[in-house]
Length: 518
Image 1: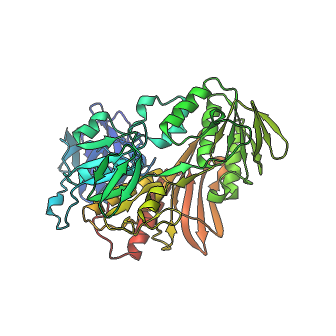
Image 2: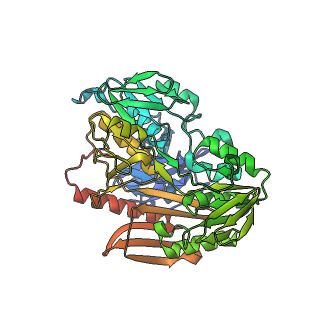
Image 3: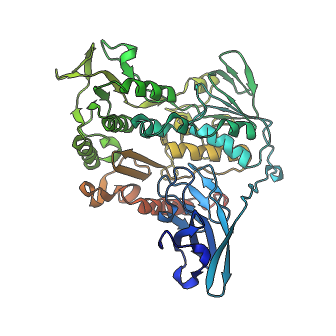
């Protein structure tokens, strides 16, 4: 529920104008504020998510939590604290006063520090924590350790040239030119110093000794650890293209990859994207927004058919075709000569270069060398601990039990990886918290945002409520009548509601789960 944006909520609102479970958005001075009611309690918080500025008034209030409709960040209505990734920073809070039949928003409150105190935990805390990998899971794990009150040494060792950055943005706003390079880092340099997080960049870990509790980097330096998180992610699948040189093949996994691609795209006229994956299609959309001609070559019958089904795949194909993308499905690159790509059916395409987006493989060499259990990923239990106690894994590299089926799954989702980092960090501190988070991801292509909640590797029925062509629908994936996942277009609130329902279902299935899970 909204009232006119210019309305000053500080002037008071009649209690009857705000039903239980409702929200009002207005102004307090120059600030956009939401007034929310839960029973006889009233809360006033900032109206915009601290991740990407999402409109929280369009989100979901669940108990005393407020969830963002864009990327499902979660905040406490009581304190403003960011409870779940992808948000790091709290939203502001105001004091609310009820006088008679009216409520008034008063002064802005000073942010309260986290009340977590790990010293009160009977679990023996690790003497130090080392995190291998500077991606989403690694950064969030370090951040969570500090939020939970851990005061021991925390070290992030990353092979990347750059401090942790917003990887999903690389194929979207950054590639289109709408997001400058300074927007891409997730935290400022001061953040690491202020929280005493040692960030070691351009350093690849060459060996792991689980017995001596040490990792060694390629330059020979050794780091001791009490607890270890392997968040080393995945590497792009590199396929041979006969006739092509490395300078003619581009991948998009790192910030450096994105910088090179942006530089190359500045003078390009036509590009061939190999692979109709999410990354391939997002690159195609971004290059089209730059005015570059794009051909997509892929072996599938429809884009993303394996993940979203034929109907959604056909819709995505038509969306791209309406923006001028040309598809060559059921095909591959047979040869590349100079600036001509020859397909397996003999078609020749002029192109300035090739972008390969054919998937990724988990980085397993370090785990295999150390003798950890691996099976198409580093195998972890429900608490994200590997086969060696005290060593955890999270993110794209981790293969974990699906709380629905119990089968091992590896899910390549940015927000999912961040939430694994949060839970792994708390379990290093003895929280013994099951990772039963419902997977979520989103993709933005042109004017369409698809949000997907749940996980369906296979299904035997798909139900569509609404119309794909109208860009307003919910697509439900079921196996033997059981709902596994829902993809939505223009129905963000429904996506949040489905997430809440799936979480409630998991709690019913696991009555012994810790009650303090965020």
